[in-house]
Length: 446
Ligand code: TYD
Ligand code: MG
Image (cartoon, rainbow, N blue to C red; front, side, top):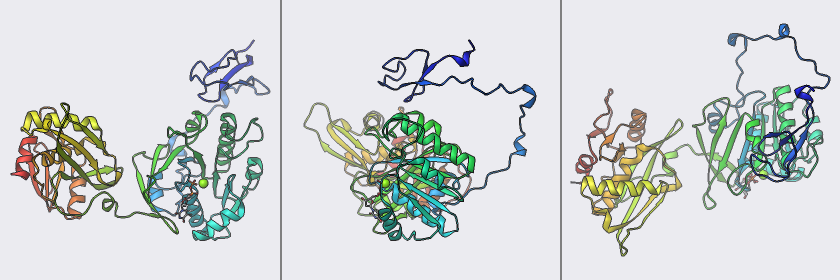
């Protein structure tokens, strides 16, 4: 028997293949996900070696990008949609996925592109009402509100952009089961991807996410598409962040920030304003740094509060930075700079809900803690840019000149950086170069 003739069972969750059926997938541990796969050798004859051709890179035409109408979204995508490229947009219910896509559809339709918005969740009157409210009233914007995917794709003729809202609400005709089950979700995604690729239509599939923040459905889903976008935000805040977790057409570094208003989503232009209380009173424990998010640079405000501890083990809590960093740098400050952190509970926060992961924020973190413990405010016109090591040394950071430019643009006058940075250009900022944390703190606190 040829290899392809054998019956195989594939897991709809993780894609693992097994020669026998089992109730539970031995690879991912999910129950009831193994499905029989049809033998691969049917009418197809193997291609002869002579018919196989490879192409030169220069013979493949470059694909043009199609603007989404939002500069922010284009930047996150790496320059706009790509013909035939399929993106999955995930996010919590009510975060604004449908709003963002409807606005995008409206802006593209206004430029003369035929757009098909398929909704398996809302009725035509609901979507049309919302579209009008969002200023997406062009006749090029076509709606299809039903969960039957085959009918939806039959309406695709002449379209230049497709949105399927959502992949869990649609029903793929050739799959069994209820919409939203792993095999249905995979079937819907596969059918949409085939339609998008064969007609070169940029496509967005909306995906609901699970409690853990993963897109609901089989894990394979994220491998099948060209890119995965995630739209998120805090419950109490009107700000939303758009990130790209996978992108076959560009970088995954970029970030877009939007504000949800009465009339839909608006891009936020002055991003630094969100995370920085712009020269308020100089309070002990506040230090500023410049963080990079893709091509965005933004000022971040680190706030530390130190209060005498009543416990044998002082407490450390942190929001916006890893708490282990607060523990580590408290120890470094104690040992290398004589800052008595051991007597204080330390609470750390990054203003505006920003998450700082870069080591370049270490110096600002240390300065904030030292300032809080000593109860001495830091100068309000100063930024801190450096990585701090266990020996208390200050190390260089990546893309320093970009960060200094942003700081100077926003009116900062001084920057404390590593003495190992080599500065080529003259900047309108007073530079304090420090070899060690102790030296850096001395320059701004004494
Ligand atoms: P929606 O796009 O339906 O979210 P999703 O598709 O991710 O589930 O957004 C719903 C929320 O957005 C809803 O709670 C109300 C709010 N919203 C506004 O504040 N302004 C608007 O103009 C619109 C359309 C929605
Ligand atoms: Mg929705």
